[in-house]
Amino acid sequence: MTRTRKRLGVNIDHVATLRQARRGQVPEPAAAASIAELYGADGITVHLREDRRHIQDRDLEVLKRVVTTRINLEMAATEEITRIACGLIPYSCTLVPEKREEITTEGGLDVLGHRDAMVQTTARLKNAGIVVSMFIDPDLPQVRASRQAGADAIEIHTGTFCEAVGTGKHEAELAKIRAAAAFGASIGLKVFAGHGLDVRNIVPILDIPEIEEFNIGHSIIARAVFLGLPAAVKEIADLIHGA
Ligand code: PXP
Image (cartoon, rainbow, N blue to C red):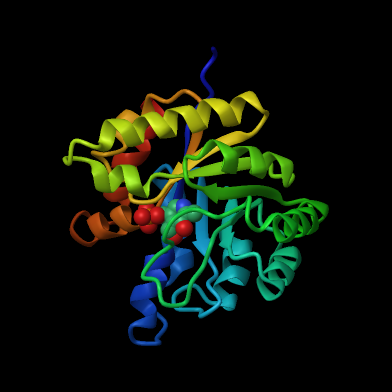
């Protein structure tokens, strides 16, 4: 199997989190996007949450003008956000579950349980020319349901695997990710992965040939506090591009 070059999408939500702590002007997420691109990002990911806790509508407009790679918009399949996405036309949209009280996205999307809403939202986004990805747990029925809903891609939720590292349960979680990736690719889906990944726990995931893209945010921004954003992006971009 010929390997495609793997890509890094840098999630810059937490640059906006820091700005929103003071409801001020800095740090500017678009500046982070440009630096991330300079140091190896193949795309920029942002989540426009319904509660606007970090990324704001204005950030999307600025990013659309300055990002030279690809914008991946993470979004809940609501009327308001779908309308915004169809106006913005990012390269891709990743449909995620969203609860107001959660700290971050908890668990994958239940595509099986929300089939009609997923089919409708996917069709609207695809009609606008946007690539559609479903953020799902490594669960084969959810992979199949994503394909049936018309998605182009799945992003496998790696959070449970990341939390299992060091507990003895991570091999079982890794096996689920491998199986979901292989099944997804076999039924024509592009396969991405994300959530909780960092420079250490990503290593076994890099060996899964079907996974083309990784969306990583918190660990990059956390390490950037000490190393600077260029070094934090470059270290993980080099790992991914070398895989
Ligand atoms: N992918 C998806 C779909 C997400 O919701 C998130 C978190 O916003 C990420 C990737 C990035 O996760 P993390 O910030 O843990 O790297």
